[in-house]
Image (cartoon, rainbow, N blue to C red):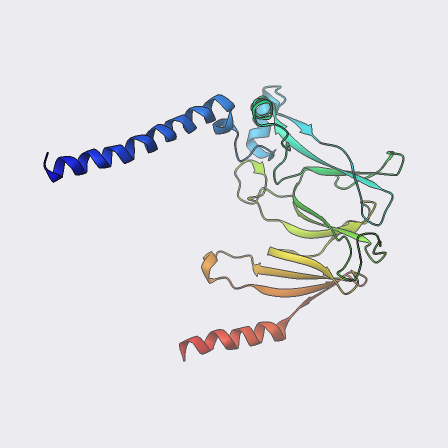
Length: 258
């Protein structure tokens, strides 16, 4: 047997197990419903898709939720609510039966209910359709141990979108989201940023301010956008762009072409 034939046999011996494993994975996904579980599983249907369903007298979606969670530094509870189409609900049930306990919403919520200590509803966060991709409650600073409650925590932060900015018929994580805050009972919702692409944010200075890392929302290619920084003073509702920091970063960047 010459070297060429030996090489072909070795290559086939390596490729065949890989192909077999790949086919097994594909078949498992089909059986489990994983391949049919869309990335839009928790999107809110709007626009033409919703109008068509109304004309056909069809109910496209229902709500999903888990159990209320206690709000830090409060006796209140909050209950995030997500949405799911009825077809996707069947796929989700099949996935849950095979994969165990999984959350019905991976990254997107529709609204939030707030409850008192006796589970009576005290507030509904939003009064219209939206996508909420993040709910953040600060749980104390580094100077507080696990048993000490940080009484300076007074707000909850959210990333919210009310507009189908990419016009795909869904309100979801792919749309433009702005930063908002509310009190710990879900009341007094306030917009923090507008038309900014939020990268990250954190409560600072005894939870009196929010430090925000962002990019300008524009049509410029993503790789040419630079991270910028701002601070929101909660008590005065004042947004401050850190211009001096931006200026120094510009200076450093310009030095690259010298």
